[in-house]
Length: 243
Image (cartoon, rainbow, N blue to C red):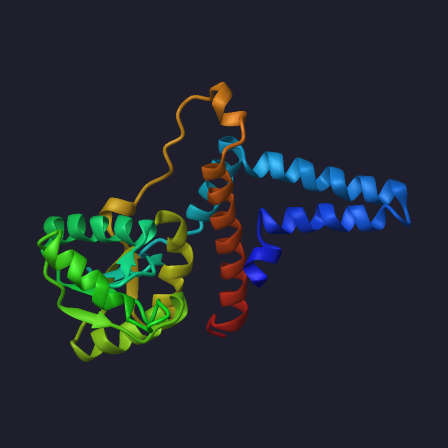
């Protein structure tokens, strides 16, 4: 509910609604809020603005640092899941599983799938991820973490499993825009982490064309993730960053 209200596009529609209500008291103030909401909707729904925003997020990913240990395992983080009988992985999770399979074939490292209950039936997402990796990608899964509820507990609960197995450093698999928050979460839980090879690098943005300034729903989705990650980074720094 809060995400819908305070992240785009919901926050911008709320701004327009406030402008309509304010217009009964102050016509100029109401028009200003409505204009800001409409301009914001346009800008955040254009590929140019959304890609610029998501690139700024990706650039916040911490570097491994000198002397960082080489990764000994791969952790793939759960994303979206679709309700069903049985439940299925959603688009974001499927992308991550594909990248995890590539990383495993490139490195030969064992995989931990991390996701807690994700459906109305409280089925752990990591069990669904393991089944897809093993059945569809022909990639073995060494461990599953099935209690986490968010990125922070992904890191906390995965670290507990891996440290018991003697693992001190991992490759993380997720979307590139999720890496700044994910890498910090694992490091703050005493497990060295870096993005897996397939998700390193920048967003590919070709030479500008007219369609980069035309609104589309995928661009608004990208802007939503950028805003969500900015907010998540601020919250994690406040709530979890070491002194």
